Image 1 (tube, rainbow, N blue to C red):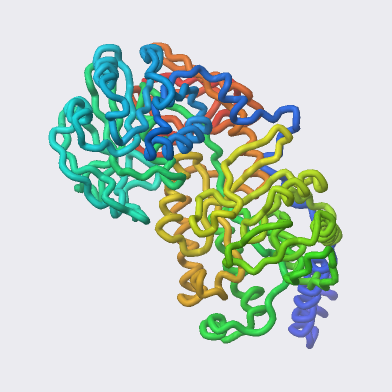
Image 2 (image 1 turned 30 degrees about the horizontal axis):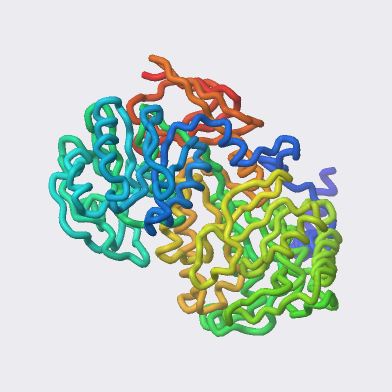
Length: 615
């Protein structure tokens, strides 16, 4: 043995031998990467529920006691536009409610409810009963929520002192919203308002009876969200005047200010989609890549963009879901003559999978699954020839992915440019039963009003609608507001980007990939600091969480020294945001409490019954 060791130490070409061994190792890795050798990939943290365990949000809500009265009117524009937002929000929060349209019915007896939501800016629609409602708050301990900026008139003047207003004037322009750091996730800073207008009423509040949670501009600005104690009950007032999807988190947080303890289910998940990945890499050069890196697009994708993305994955524990697209031809007759670069697909796909990521479907090509659609001159996509052509092309993509990744179950579909017609959706569900997730967009776009706009929901067959909230490496003000809001509404992040964002000036290419990467890094950092224990998921894991979120409904019982939460339709995991307004939590059985900010906590349940003792 000693003689052999001596011979190796004296070998003249041992340096050359080491180089040869290193290259042999690299060659072996590349061979495995490009040959389709089967890997044992990471197990899913959450798996999709069996069909017999699926419960829709509507079914879950039907079992919840109706403790909230919503008053609105289809005869009032502001009220009728606000109601659909609250209908969805209360369903997601599993808050049982009765909605009364004052254009058709009078205000019913309300003393059996715990909260009244008054969806009006003009209180003349409510009329004289507004005084009766205020007396109910004072004498019986009722709770009233005003989500919309209240107009100044005789009816509002009659209750101003009761809701904490000492003086008021005309409305002021809403430029941004400053949120107290102990009220909402992502608080302690201002968020710019897009499409702002004179929506915030200038008010002076009674400092003895009110507590302010948000202001216009900065911590000294016009009050925008406050609560007021009145007799035995409470008012909560919103004074910012915005009422669309991007602000649901403000409404959920405001509603959670009622009661000794307030609780509502959330999804608790973060996922990052890579649209058009893996795909064919564009040939040649790009002016921005050449300017900043002096290399080709292919070299940039392989040696700069993808290593940077993997580094971010390692840094923040992110799991990417790549959405495969086979080619970029415009064939819409079922022709599938493209010759994809299988080596690139295998290389990128296997690296993504080994990082704990997932692969989903994007399309055979980038033509949306639509047989007849007006793209209003925004896109030059073609309509597919017929149903059979759509099916044939998509089948080719499925077969292609199965051949390259034989042990990978792919169940997520994201439509090109977030465009999907009903006939395309129907085709996917009927012909490709492995698809369980359809993912469009969450926030509406006035220009792209034909895009696939979704809510987080599940149908009886277990198909999950899972919209993405934000996109790109540089979030604009609207998306930033939406991202923060959804942390407080569903406790989620759902983001998508493309490899070619760095090539497109409309998506930030002019500032360069280094700046885009740094912006993306900052967004991930903000998420990790703003939302403790936000779970990093793949697309399928996220959908599994949506299924559980849709099904659960908490029922609470309060005792002198504790509260007991019974979770209807509990399967194996349930997540909640819980605010301790008048109580302080001590010990927990059946779950785990994590402090988020102020008196707001994340409750992770691992049993059907949760008991929280009070200090």
